Each structure stands twice: as structure tokens, then as C-alpha cells.
Length: 102
Image (tube, rainbow, N blue to C red; front, side, top):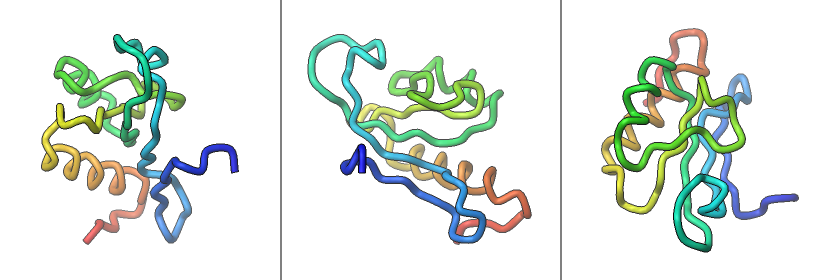
């Protein structure tokens, strides 16, 4: 396994990814400082991505399609309830059949 510390969230029916948690070098994300930072990548509506990117804690998706995914810093910058909402949205986007996360 190349990245044993990464956590991938998959839909149990279609096996598609809807979120991934990883630690990334700050410099790879365009952030100042040394060391790694934890991020969450989630699939997102492209229009929403544009709005989110104007807020602190949201970055272009690391190692994913930047027009359909966004990276969220997991350092306390983004509120937990916002992160939870994004995870739900991401799950709904990959379902494709209208099934919702409970």
C-alpha cells in the first residue's frame, strides 16, 4: 500500500470515491511553512467550488480533478458542520440514482 495513512470513503454499492483524507506537504498545496497538513478531498458542484475557494480553508483539489473536487483543510479553519455538509453533498453526487446518505 503506497499511502497507508490515507482514508478513502467509497459508496458501498458502486464503489465510487466520495471523500479521501490525507496528509500532504504544505508546499504541495501552496501553503507556507514546512511539514504536512491534513486535508479532506470531496467531490463538489463546480459552481460551489468557485464560491468555496474564496473562503479560508478551501484549496484546489490535491491530486484530483480541480473542476469537480475541492480540498478542505482539517486544521480547524473550516467549521465541522460545513465539512459534514460537504461530505453529504459529495456522497449524493456519486450516487447517481438519487439514494441519499442517512
